[in-house]
Length: 155
Ligand SMILES: [Zn+2]
Image (cartoon, rainbow, N blue to C red):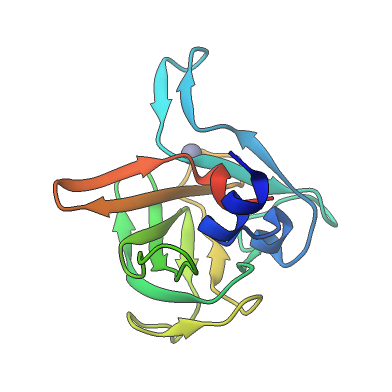
């Protein structure tokens, strides 16, 4: 598919925008992980900025998001999710980014709009893991949510 079309479809953002502009890489990809014997339902990302990735680091995003949930989930510790608007697909509220090992910013509540580049939250240590953000893209169909590869959101 034409990459320009893809970029409009998903309103792709710079992956570095996840950590406030710090150079960001995928430390564990979506899908089958033979070495771990599991199916990774999202991607793990880390940044290479000053001192490397640490629990407590700031989480941002390159476009406006609406907070959909704030809570905790087994295996992830603190979590939050947020939806986004697409210019070509009517998916507002139906496509959500799920942030695992991540605490929503103080004072943030469901329904709040967080502008591109503003503080969404911070990395939060669930115990026993190296610091990273677990990021999922969940598309909600009438039959239920499907977790797809979030890399399509990034350029
Ligand atoms: Zn993960």
